[in-house]
Image (cartoon, rainbow, N blue to C red):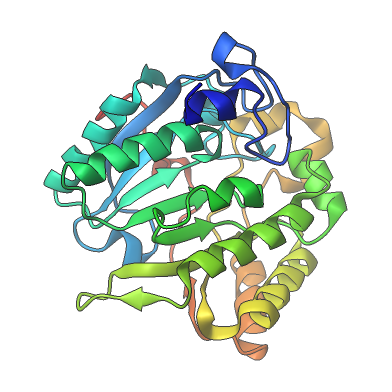
Amino acid sequence: MNETDSLLKSCQLCPRKCAVDRINGQLGYCGRPAGIYAARAALHFWEEPCISGSRGSGTVFFSGCGLRCVYCQNHEIALGRQGREITPERLSQIFLELQEKGAHNINLVTPTHYIPQILSALRTAKEQGLALPIVYNTGGYEEVSSLRLLDGLIDIYLPDLKYRSPELGARFSNAPDYFEKASLALKEMFRQTGRPLFDAEGMMQRGMIVRHLILPGQAGNSKRVLRWLHETFGDDIYISIMNQYTPMPHLNELPSFQDINRKVTPEEYQRILDFAEAIGITNGFMQEGDTAKESFIPPFTGEGL
């Protein structure tokens, strides 16, 4: 049995540890069997400036998700409703095609449940000339043992840190252990990448950017997250404070979540920015303008697959 099959035969790649046999079609929390399913592979311009740059980030959006937050802006692909199956060989070709299109990096979005297949595709692509930084773009709910499989292949980690409390993790993501797992995962990511490194164009070549999405009415959570990040990593990482929370139409059908069925107000966002400045965060990104709208969500039409 090869490495990929052994890891998927009783899958424990993410903290859910479903232990299902994905090789034989059993489905765990992520909803995906052993095949790779993706919804889009294209140049993407809506990441942080040092990731997107002027030519775009070569982004592959994978289908399925082991977190599945109730407010997810990509919920159609998180639930596996969008996407088509591709082989590891095709994925390696996609990486090379994105490099030929001028991408600054290869950006793997929601990749956790495909780690074994991605390892195979990355190794093949690198043997065939892939020379771009590899970005691991995740919700932060990761298993350290799985991240260690990636050591030496990932250059930039781009995780979320969503919640500080078990209550919010349970309510919004069915993951009361979210912070417990994510905090350990971020420390492992930082161990692998170290302090940030940029090229002459200001593009990140190595390092970690932690994203925090502000949720409506949850300023206390945001402050606790930012304080933990700053106390833990100081200026050795970048923190992206995001106001792009977009209430998706399916929330209208969920009465118990009407408190987050609105955008974050400019005043809410400014208070969090002021707090970040007050505690000494200097390596950070903020968002300007109206980013909280569905037009900023890319179309998942199978482009580039």
